[in-house]
Image (tube, rainbow, N blue to C red; front, side):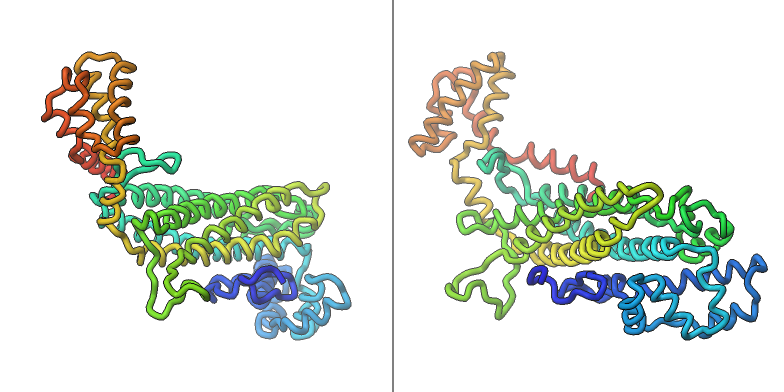
Length: 445
């Protein structure tokens, strides 16, 4: 239908992931949406009554009798081909004559866009709560492995030592930036609109809009046409897409570190878990692979939501069909892989002994820059020092002789350095000083 990940496509094509958490999936259900529409309509009636435009007794009838029936709305829509009219007709059947005050001076998008703002706000709040959990888990693991030395890699090749805690601290800091981006995006999307056809307030007072928005925890949008402009929605999905790249970054690193030849870290393999239908020995990074794949899907919705900002004149509805899929899909999928990432990081199995083993694969070559800088301190030109050290390094590469030995046997180097200075270069003391400084700057204690 869509992909194995999805098990349900409702009448509005909102795709709900099979493994999504109920509280997130519920936000995008038809029942939740129609109840929000009803809340917007009733609040508008309340505001009209405060202005003396709706009789108080009829307002009480509306509040008492108004309700929705999803099946009935869908039945009416089959005939009307208009979801808002089907919704209002359904409500009218429950309310009776007092329903003439419902939707007074309003247009469909007043209800649709204001309710959508609430849905995005609710979804965003859940995501922010979970992102803060991820940040705490990353912080905890960073502290745990603050001084767990491992090799740093550039181009996939051994570079110089780092610590596993620094990897986690890096992700922690990026997670905090993602939290800020989503918070900022939610401020822009948390706006409502009750301004009537083409947004001029000709048939409805701005006081109605103010009242409804305050009750829903929104702010009135500064200016609209017949719709709230979609740049803010695009910014929200952009923030999600960027945050998803962090989740994929974590997953990609774990996938590499779990490779048999590396095995510095591994996803927790639970009792009874199976890795392969054919090979009983297999333990695969399936969660990280799933996270990587779903992150691609989230990014794909960014293009569509950006294009939603370009509409004809005061509005068309080319954006509507897109966001009925993109907004639920992106938020629910992000929530799913976010929680899966939290679980992976929290239960990640780390192998310091294998890190040490891999660190020693190049027989100490990771100290090459230290030796070069020491020679420069002694007065040698940079290129001269570089070539001296490279000569010893290439001997280690080609002959497998430990780097310290090739350095001590390099007459040009030993004319400038003592044996003690060479040996000191293989210490991790300087790295640990830098780790303390970085952790402090990241606010990790």
